[in-house]
Image (cartoon, rainbow, N blue to C red; front, side):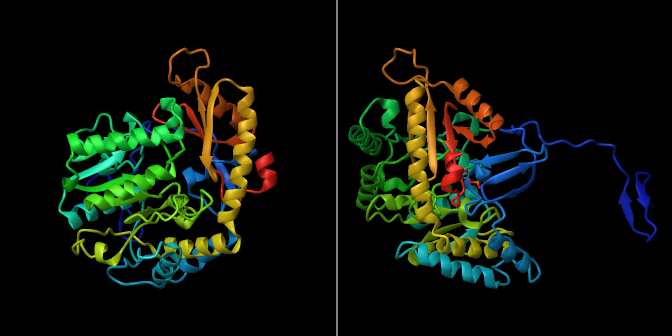
Length: 430
Ligand code: PLP
């Protein structure tokens, strides 16, 4: 018999009776701006408040080709009419084959095998599973300030703020943190910071984590949520050398800094000759459609046993079609070079502004990733004292001026600017 809280529909089916709930978004989510988008194009978000905002957040570094690039929109629309989802380990679809071919063309030689998932966190986890399966070793070394996601394993690898892991311990075991060469914070020049960080890494290997028990070193070549801090090439070269020496897998998390954003296709390419063993990519890969990937040499990828990697939605057909279109737009509109040139313009402009405000301690970045670090100019300590309140105040004031930005850094005192790769000279001057 039917229970009393079920209505009988005219067709004989049943629909649940309204519960009277008034659902709202979780209070655990904090929106960085009050903007509700009506529609968006290129670098601009047009709000339901009738205002237009220059979007230097890009969905946290995702809408690489700008909002609603016509080519990406057309590719997704067309794909929706063909097949939306098949699950590629069950039935293969054309967009994923095409994306694999096109992605292969921009990957370093030798990284010729690709696994697809949906999000950065899932891809990070896939890379760690692979490294552990391939080496049979338990430990993972990460670098201070790294952000690798919010799933429990990805949060275990994240040191960009305790807010990303507090309250739900125990985290994954076997994760060990080494310093990142944060020259400004240490009050060092870059060479000294690199020397210090590599020496501390060697000390970690000598004192606590045997290198031959270490599966991987996982690094963001440009720290994202940790404060928009590029790793000096000498540091990344030092990691490569140690990885080779000890048979450790070097994983480059290119989720935020990859796909042309820094003025090279991959951010690790600023270190001449460096090739990681695994590259993780997501965000800019499909201009806003959820898809992520890891790339590695086939012999390495083959070490993951069937069933160990995968997921229902991974490598979705519409997202893959958007990825193919994204790559075409990046090539045809010369967006990697645009990121380099506009990035230089952005940093030069920010440095001029910084010269006028003692609260801005550091301006840094690479391509279209720029960080502005706010400090207390009256502090007398030897290392800078973070001023998160000023960063938050400026970020909010920018909204009033029609510019959307985000803050980041473990201490929340860095404003990050993440324009779309299509940003123009005029927009940057605005
Ligand atoms: N890795 C990096 C460098 C990131 O910036 C992010 C997200 O910001 C992630 C991993 C996690 O990606 P997702 O949020 O898609 O899970």
